[in-house]
Image (cartoon, rainbow, N blue to C red):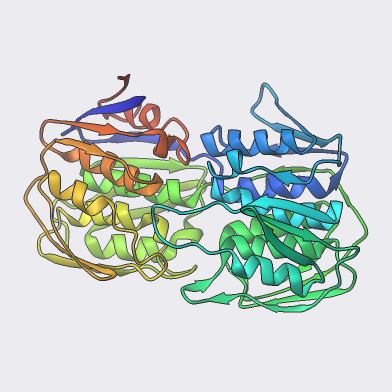
Length: 421
């Protein structure tokens, strides 16, 4: 099993090119199940989760191939299999996004429930009720959701959940409604840029969708979709992570191929901390003051502060000059990084869905363990600035969502080695 050995204390300086968004690429890849002909996707990052999705698609009769320029070619060749098996689904929760496309195109879907998640409860009941509202019958058999429908009929569907709109549920039901008869209206839909990107891709394939990126999405069903060439948006979470990497090391990074308009809440908080962010034509330049100010952060659905950057900004606030407070309103249990940061000298106290962070003068290297994707990114950031050496185990988590993160960081001055036990 691989691990990172990080020697801290280096100031980052240079240019980083941001990869395509994993959370946009995965549902778009799933949507190709509904497409006739070849689809060519540009900007799909080479990640473990993307490879898992390719394996899932291959099992479902889809050919996937990487071009020399990095483009991903996808063609459906066999529509007989409708079963997304547990062995692959359990490795990646985004596999549930196969449910809508399978049901819409093949009239049935058998998708294994993904099971538990380290960051908290993530039910898919809204996905299933949305499919039922479109006319599908559902049944749970031996851990698999079985869905079937002779035809799907447009409907009005409410997607609000206890912690905000469901992002993957919005994607799933929007895809299913694309081939339904009549009009579907999704109320309280997720507004994330990745949902907008999925809608834009489906439109490029011939779908009739309006309102993606707003709480009300309207879909007028069409009879078929055709292949196209499409470029995935840049990854806003990777962008935010590298912004924080520049800040925590008192460095200066130029981030190319990014869209700062997708990170306005993050930029607001970072500027209050003392981070200097200057926009350029194709990105931003990020640097920071030596003294970091404490702030309050509360995660919210888009366009609020993203839950996927909560762990990373918590690592930064460990070094702020004063007391900060971070509240998690999306996944209240998403604080597995706290104990590991405290092992590195942080002073963090958890109270329910909030952590109180007392800033310290420095962090110190220590053996730490990644518990999930974003927690592992936070521990890398802490290791970059910690005195001495940090060993981060279970880095397969970070490989799920960051494309060669150690190579990108080393290119701008970090000292990270990927080693095997």
